[in-house]
Amino acid sequence: MTIVRGALPVEMYGRDNYGAIAGALATPGLMARAAGPIFRRAAVVDTRGYEWATAVLIAVAAVGALAFAYATHAAAGAPPSPR
Image (cartoon, rainbow, N blue to C red; front, side):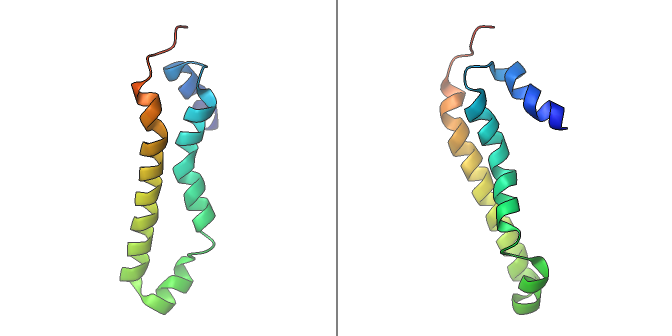
């Protein structure tokens, strides 16, 4: 998986915007890892209940998806680079 994560953007989009594309692909996972310690499941469930914990996880996933869409919006309109 780690080899594919680094090689796939180069093969699909070329080398011109590799950093921006790789960063956009990594954003949702990095955001989830950063929010993990803050919203530990056991602490949230003990204080608020399962419904609130599920709502928080859905909100974090939505923010990650929106960040990914925002970051890749400019790259989607760019013409493919020659190889």
